[in-house]
Image 1 (spheres, rainbow, N blue to C red):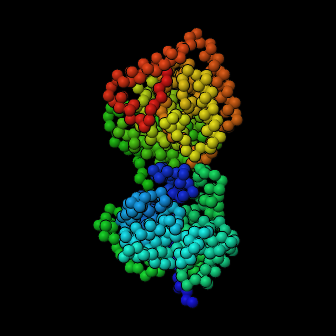
Image 2 (tube, one colour):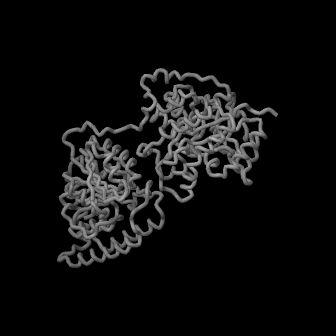
Image 3 (cartoon, rainbow, N blue to C red):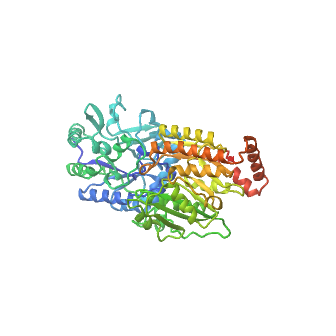
Length: 594
């Protein structure tokens, strides 16, 4: 039996927030909001490979190639092969045949332009190909790919087809594509990768060492190893979304990964798929044509916003208040998000962001000063001691010099881009626009069931107390009329104050518009709310509001409330065309209360 002189090393070029473990919580259209660590992790990967004189195939997402072209070119210039991994981090099971074809073509074009070399290989971005997914190999063969490395015979997967465990040809009509499956072996009675990222990181090192040696001794085929670039970065930001097992899967033993990979690379000789298959490196014509426009290595940061936006005259001025308390891990994500919001609102509003540090005890204030301190369009304020989220919001409202003031959570659990739809609802006669995930047209994603039960139960009780029949009373994502709310004196400065503000407007017979929105779980850090204390506080607040209502000399009956609602809707309909369009542009019916 002859053995290969070299084995195959593959690297998935991806960031910590791209991974399938967090797919439910980090949507692809929000990737640009996260602090990227690709530069750091790629440099560590290239240094590790150079130290052990190993070359590898880097499977690159099309999105990464478009956002970081200089980084992809740097990898190619270091002598490594560039291959494609789909455009986004999507499973083949999420796509139809035509969607898969379109996604693959789009990704290949982006990767070839960035890397400057013709792409010959493919790997699925999320998960692995199973027996029911082999149609994807047919499409890859039709598209002219030379090889694929998307099969991992783990567990019972392909258990009845042993030839799928080693390199083999897949035939489709008159086209052929070579499959390079991930090497798997029997470890603790279960078939799993013997030299693969998460398994190499999680399992005891002596087990993976023994399994890799057994493979090399048993098979004449090369050992196909893989890992992800983010696995070399123990300093990466910690996402708190997902359960305990999700976080263990992603973060456990990150600090041990460089040594474990180093031992593997020093024990065996590794090369790229291209080198092993003796494929010629072909310069990509489109990349040659675009080379003058391709950023040099190092010029691959995510679309920066410099704060110098060309504003149009005669636009309404808006202030967005963002309360922050012990959110140092979240500041880079918040900065990217606010830059995106500012750009999105630039054509319609003159926007200023006012960030209020509510007496943080960590490095939040220092990081806020670094991120926002010298940037036009951003202002900072600080409480000497922690007072609570409602107090921070009220501080921002009082400091604002605009009539339209918005507030949003620093964790962006509501998408702040929705401000573009909420602000137009603050028409004359409306005093507050508040987001509502419990509205029939709203939604909640990945929020624990117990929290939903408490929140909805709390809203039900508030509806028994107030005339204003909202679906949600505790949302911090709002648009205020400053002249109405700035003078309100709240008795509660913390979470209760958010609901109390609605109660005070209700007592004053002010008009509130409810906007259906989507609430998502936090991505970074933990909620600061003390659940039991807050629930008890809500009961006390309801009693107080009930008593204040009782003390009022006039208490309009329900019929007059309904008449006022109808009157407001009539006023909106009789208003300008712009106002009418704004109301109808909302994604779902908007609840109006007075």
